[in-house]
Image (cartoon, rainbow, N blue to C red; front, side, top):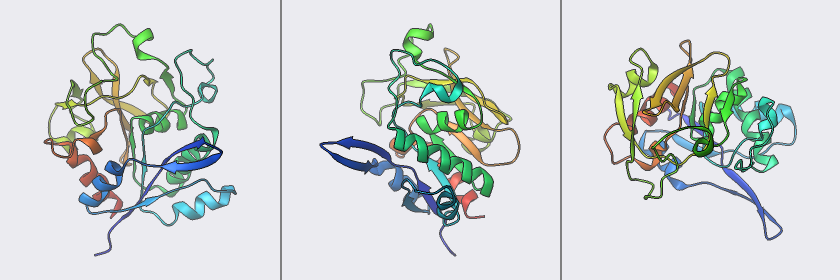
Length: 236
């Protein structure tokens, strides 16, 4: 049986006069453990090239990173917003749009959740600590595989169907979050303070965004199920 190929968006930076793509290995390792083949995606030079690249993959994994330029959702930049490199901004949204056209499964993690949302016309909280009253630390100082707060999951959701539970302990490394879901998205999980932790398609498409980092929690019960479900859907 052919293994599904999962395209993964890396991060991008310009440093010491060099352009560099980079990716935490935890993403590709989680895809491998779930039975998929990870394939790192890069910027293309022509719009049709994104279409061609997406034709080679069976699912799209949108990863974490810095913040989207808020001009995308018609807002001024908050003083705490750390805008990603414009090259990543370009390929992140182009790959997502082509994945929608091809109707392949999309899993967005942290920034990837926000990419799904703004890509569908939604808006973001630009800085949780200064814009939300909460005792929860959403950008933890503990190690990446440490569980720090609960997420509460809506029972009718795809996320609930995957995890089989209505709450889960997660890690947390974000200062932005979904404020207004984009077109065709519904909220499927929240933290105790009401911050949105997951959005998903309101129909049977596998479009799922989550704010925590399950790729770092593969040894904890439940989190590997997200990647298994994603890879399984990509293999259909």
